[in-house]
Length: 407
Image 1 (cartoon, helix red, strand yellow):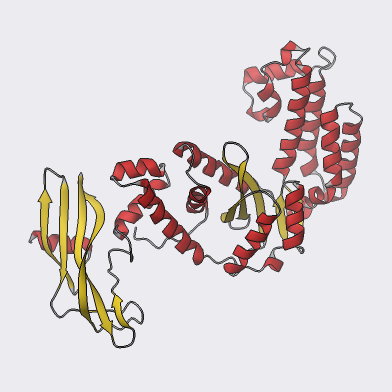
Image 2 (tube, rainbow, N blue to C red):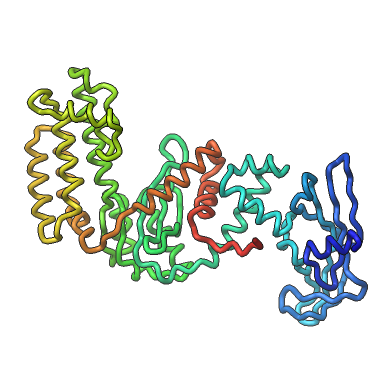
């Protein structure tokens, strides 16, 4: 078998394409495969699909391909324009690359597999390309795949914000809670993000009136946006954010109390961790701090209130939930701990969304996982140049997209 025959089979070429010659430069560590088409060959029209189009003229093109062992490999071909009797003169599509790309489909598939595990900048260094070219490629595939996504069955949606970079720059993510996929991401965390999501949902065949459940935190801006753009949806306030409110209140009590009680210093995580996640030493230290007859700590009092709520509220029968919430809020208001009193006022004023959980059963646990993936990718990359890049990576990792690439 000739080397050209071998490369034809490896590349999966079909008529009228064939490998004309192969050159190898050992010093440059480069392999060049030169393709050609048989004289008189016919091509499909890229517009109407008619397969009898003759070549009108050609222009020489080059594509980066998968490495040949440790050597960079490139494909070269005279790319023809064809004359279709229906559509006129058109540029043909080649089977090994997408239109306008300087990479082959297999090279792009390889890069897409790498960037799911590595920062784009590191992948660019590994393959010997600029990260700008790789980001353009990623943006193309993500945009193309999202344009074909079907949101017509979306009914339960979770929304949460996450930091896009240090400071106060945020993006908001909307997630399909039934299919565990990222639907939409956008800059900001105000009421307008719901309007942007509504537009995107409709662009993908979704029906805003079909969204009957929304899970979110107790942000006034989120509530306002949901009321304006999804008026038929019932709101469930996310249990993870309720726990976060309680933890922030405990930390506020601890910080104030540790000024006079030195034993509270360096104990932050004892109060914030779930009891089952504590080490043996941590559990013993916490148990000692919780003895009210000996310590009388206000932080211990706040912790017991949090533990009571977290362990009991979401396990109650629906008929008993509102009464329990009423009693707990009364307990917190009488505690003389201002942070806990503030949490009680917040929970009671949002009780409808808290009690809705007993009917919807939804939470933003999926969103917490997505945020973790996105933040981990951002940390590996040491940040992204733009929010657009962050959103592109989020869609790639969590959007359940069909990228339609060879495997």
